[in-house]
Image (cartoon, rainbow, N blue to C red; front, side, top):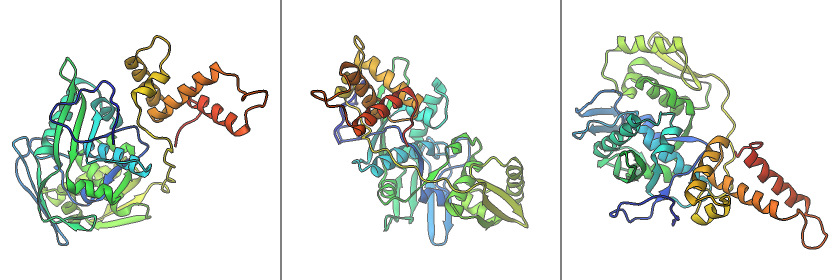
Length: 364
């Protein structure tokens, strides 16, 4: 897929065709890492090997000198997976190499945009790149019994003068990319990113994977500890589960504990799936020029379009289409050649495009 780039200077050694992340409607998580404890739940540096075995599936997670990848680092993969699945569902070509802007990632995953959070993103990339997995987990009808990284590589595409990343390029591992190609993903609630405790995040993943749209899912406390990937004593986990049950702030699911059996139940009926946008998502320099106001540079127009898209909750392509249509409508009377009026269908299209930019409609 060839994309005309705006304000991006790729580093010289990255030459492969890449996919550019765009705005999407739903967050996705790959089912294999939802089922198995691939990511560390520790908020501190951890350099020991984690081992996990369950029903014939074995995992050894090996750290590099930067430490094991954490469940917070997984946000990067979830963001990339969501971008790729959105494009795939829209019938657009995707690539194993993905480029995204650091700012968009931080905003989408409910993080602040201070220098500290840019640094945390960089450290997370180092941990994802350094952590190795030895596993026989099956994805897309293939069984991997070898060692591989969570991501194959990453590169900083550009840095601002103050050193903050503007854009990042990541090449996914075959393991994760196969999950995307085979649609082995689930939609997750965006409130997941408001969960601050690692155990809460992991509990939500398991509830989403196993309870899903069912009424309830039960699991023994000891089995849950294994799936969480925790080494703490059962009494500690028992205390934590009871505390989480009292607060009851997991997205979508209630949690309760009785006789060392944990039960997850849905808080409300599952949401109806939203229709994916039919418009293409990528914006070229030509699109920017058409949408720019008189005397406005491409960079200024690009920033204005991004802000409008964020405010309206629609894709940048939708904003561009609306702006261009609005400009054309102002130049020409709403009639066709001669005195024949515009058809009701065409008139409706123009009205809808105007409404989109004025905030009266939202894209699904």
